Length: 153
Image (cartoon, rainbow, N blue to C red; front, side, top):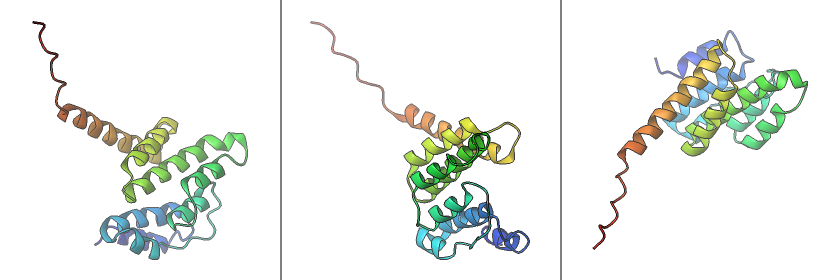
């Protein structure tokens, strides 16, 4: 079974979940490219969680990451930490899908910093952040050392 298929099946029992549509998009983008993934984006109309409607529109190419972050700052102050977490997480995953690794890493690291302990999606953010950290360390280890300065005569 193609990985994205599991999200299509899940949609039959949970049709108003932007997260399901987002993960379907991420799988499809990896296999088929961004434009095909956008064309096949599962429509969700009634997910009332902030900023999930904006995440849906980001993946559809109709909003920007800034729009998603702005939405995360709306509503009761007590809801904003979770809203910020989800905004950064899905912005980071979106940037990964669109090949913008530096932007993806920054957003994922921000999501990991905001993640509450014990939650599954927090674990997703922390694992993604750890992968970026390991990759950065590997790149740093591959860089040649700076040449030694010339010896005085």
